[in-house]
Amino acid sequence: MYRYFKATRALTGFVRVTAPCAKRAPEPIRFYSTKDPGKPPNQKKPVCPPPTKPIEPCRPKVSLKEKCRSQMDDQPKPCGPWKEAHDKKDSKHTRVLLFGLATTIGTLLLLWWYGVFNPTTESISTKRKVKKKTRTVEKIPKDSSEIPSCVPYLLVGGGTASLSAFRAIKTKDPKAKVLVVSSESEYPFMRPPLSKELWFSDNEEAVKNLTFKQWNGKERSLFFEPDEFYVQCMELMGSPNGGVAVARGWKVVKIDPDEQIAYLEDGYQIKYGKCLVATGGTPKSLPLLENDTNKEVNDRVILFRSIPDFMNLDQITKEAKSITIIGGGFLGSELACALGRRGQKTGMEVNQVFPEKGNMGKILPKYLSDWTTDKIRKEGVKVIPEAFLESINFESNSLMLSLSNGKKMKTDQLVVAVGIEPNTELAETSNLEVDEDCGGFVVNAELMARTNLWVAGDCSCFYDVKLGRRRVEHHDHAVVSGRLAGENMTGEANAYKHQSMFWSDLGPDVGYEAIGIVDSCLPTVGVFAKATEKDTPKAVVTATGNSDRSETETAAKPVKPSSGDMQPPKDGEDYGKGVIFYLRDDIVVGIVLWNVFNRMAVARQVLQEDKKYEDLNEVAKLFNIHGD
Image (cartoon, rainbow, N blue to C red; front, top):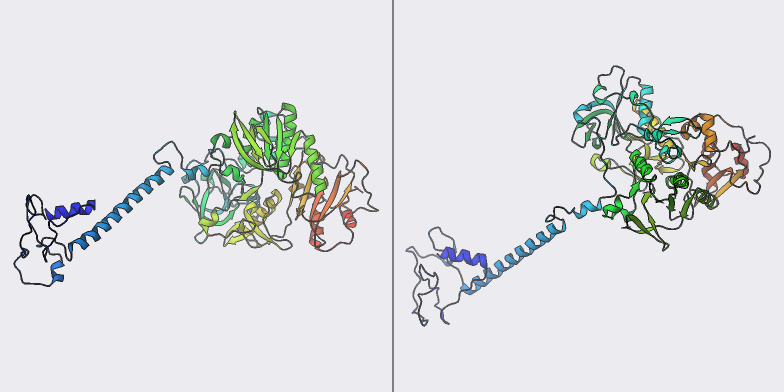
């Protein structure tokens, strides 16, 4: 019974026992009762009995310390003054009870916050990760066991850099067996037409089949190679002549450079001899949209980058009354021109919002940026410069946009085109270095990150002898860096010395190419001339039969410098075509060729000189912009 009493007191912490008399005996008196242990029998008036010795077992006398020590045959009893021992234990149990109660309440609140008690509510962390509609990616082959477990060449990523790499590998080693693992459902394709030529085709069936008309009117597939070019994954290692197989919809989540093993998302392992990482980039979103958990809003936002993005936007713009583009760079301006022309036919309103003072304001000097903005406005686009999105809400089946300039507008669809972020998730799982300033995997001059592991394309950060460590996101860089990496994978040891170029077309009539550091913050010198019918993107594609400006510039023939004096353009002929030099410490570090084509070799030569020029008009003669 005494043990029962002690256990009860320990659980409750609130049992208090007081002596029946004011005066207590020098030694505690123990009463034995089956009804109420520790108390005397019921009496009408408490009477203090004479002091008696406590009943103890018959055993030799021992010290107080020995008495307090627990014995199996002993009845438990308090040691020392009863009141002090009781108060101490009472306070301890109260604290334990309060701590347990607070822990329980805190746990319940945490579970409620994460939606455990509401199965239909997503957790807060999951909601914040939602940027856009989830897209189902078809896996081909469906089972990873059909993918070779050991290959001589493994390419991670299915973009332009990978395509250029396996072409280089097959050129050096015709019987090479190359496996490409791509997170996209499609075979390698060209991205530039997604914001250019595809929007100018009137043949809906051709667009559905991803076939577009080049500026010269000839049709071309968006895909680099026909489906018959590739071999099935299961047949790759058994093919006597080698080949290229693409595992589509699969993702490499880890690479072990020491063991030379790549891991897929389901844990499947692929042993490789040589590996290239060309994972490209992911379109950036806006912080405002990243934290927005409204499904209705996210369903009406497109981060434009891929074939599904184009197919989705193409269908939307056939029915939408208004659409708004966020971004004034290359992609945003190209889409604005393309959708503006479509809007003139369908009555769709097209808005373009960006924080710069004019289109491509970060690249072009102000006077040329202003001219470009006027050009886009003539295409039917409502351009809103020096503004950014402050809030977005879903009202009356439309998006309500609040801009920083105080304006509000309704739109059916929002397209975000504000650049990309390099895909470097493999860095953490694979112990690869990422540049803190530029982003991208750090590689040496041969584009090698580790032994038998190369990186190329948008996700590579390389060292430029002239311009320092850089990361370039353009098509030409993907082509050249992928080709160089592929050659080095076959045994070459070539350094990356190429000055990559990029181009942008604002429809078939206006286009420009650029190389080096082209930053509107730098001082510039522009030399212009009167443009002719031959000075358009349409004319250069007609002459070469190729819409890939990277390829046409590589194949271009040298031009003879102009002779005689340069003639300034007349009124109304401003900015027809010309050359813009970007200077740093009076040295040319970047060049824009405005409606001037097949002169990129000359631009590279000027940059390689790395010297100060007394008269840039004389340098402009090298480009023969007057057509002499």
